[in-house]
Image (cartoon, rainbow over all chains, first blue to last red; front, side, top):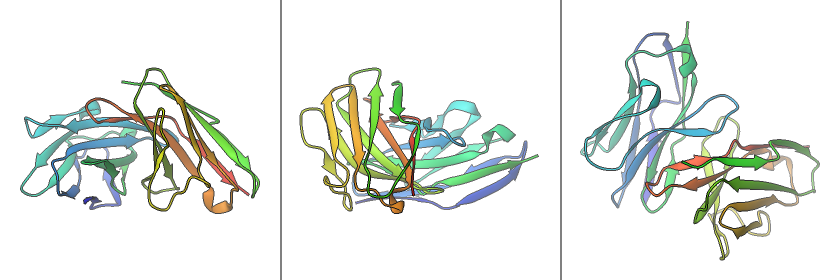
Length: 110
Length: 113
């Protein structure tokens, strides 16, 4: 069985501050991990992915995520956010199939 | 990557009617997926559509309510049948790349009155 838990439903943060969006997963098989972003009234697009190799992966728009196998986590980070980063962020796990987390709404304030 | 288009982008339908949503991909793909996303919520997989075989439905979704066609490797349709207000949602189609990431269409926003 697989599951994905995004620990924060909403994260408000001031512009230029750092942010971390947390994601934990469980699976009985090896998995691939993804973060997707959904801007208001748009479809989902891939931010970054972890398939194998280096546990720190970099994505678009200055985001990065670190795979921690022992803690079964894949937290998303950005050192300095912009107003334009306001969006819904989904963590996803691909084992037998892809399962999406409930989403974290990042709200960047001026 | 893949570019996916969906039609219609939005619709308002009356209770008891049906709506067919089209999904077109710019390249040939084996599997296409249909998701439902209710306002402020995550994605729920409705079914997986493989070309040349019956769609595989997830628990809670049935073919009579959500019939799917997959006539070729670039196109699929999802019909929402006998609609009720509870079917109001965003419907998304997606495809999976060789490295397992998914590419999504822009979605169809359905409102049932």
